[in-house]
Image (cartoon, rainbow, N blue to C red; front, top):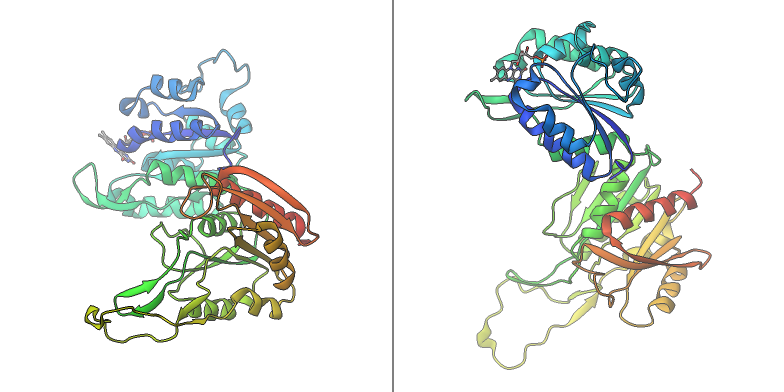
Length: 400
Ligand SMILES: Cc1cc2nc3c(=O)[nH]c(=O)nc-3n(C[C@H](O)[C@H](O)[C@H](O)COP(=O)(O)O)c2cc1C
């Protein structure tokens, strides 16, 4: 998350979803953000000022004319100036109408008019209020002026109607805030990431695979997309949540992955091969389930799968190529050989023997080797943090 030390102004209006606003405040504060809250008079009917004050450890602002002790300046102007981002969640139909029409008759709407930071509106209301042409027109006006308006969800609403109008969940709102505050240093770049294991079928019910979970590749893909890249993620079968990326290609076998990589390689600016495709596949695929009655020893003969990295290395033009290595012995020597043999610009060596590292784990311990053979040992960190660090290093190495 990029929320640490970020100044977030949270506006809360009088809708039933206001009960979720303290959670938004809490999640932001837990990420290290500095949150100041403005409540409308109506919002105070739904949730208390004290709750936000306790969560944010800051004064809560409600009145345009009250003199706030730490704030000698005019509140609506100084708060607007202070914020890195101004988020109104939940935003009522009434406040949205005020924002769209330049009405500034309370602290929240006056601060909106004075805003100079990016503004994000998170609506929440009854379906008929949402679909009313007046609300639709107000939202369109705001969108045309560059204000971000997050979508609402369809569900059973507090008023017992079923339909659109439910506010996004606090975790999703915080993710959107994080996304908007994040540096976009990979804007427009095409990033190809492979992730996860492959599975090699023996018969209709049996297969061979490996322990790769896909977590490292998914973290890299998600982070690159958040930084503005158009990410194509080619993934083997995994049990984890699919990340939000421009293009997700699901594959099963090493041959499928090879094909998908070849099809998507040419347009890529950065290629990150974090998958663990199987090196071998059974030579014969049995179209019927192999019966145990065969008895005795059962042997499977294998044949080599194409070496995906090596094949694309031969086609490399402008692409910055990053490989991963998971070795159980002579890690560095093997990785150095792979770096040169596969024409890589960087190789990340998974320390699969370290605790809290390698396959399945949420954390990783790696060594990064660049194409000049500079070696850097990276201490244990989460795969999400490591993804950020790897992308920072790629960004530094590539002269975009
Ligand atoms: C129980 C209750 C729930 C309400 N929920 C919503 C809501 O979810 N969305 C909305 O736009 N208005 C809702 N309203 C109406 C607003 O409170 C009303 O329009 C008010 O003027 C909003 O003021 P504000 O925008 O200054 O906060 C609700 C009213 C009541 C009594």
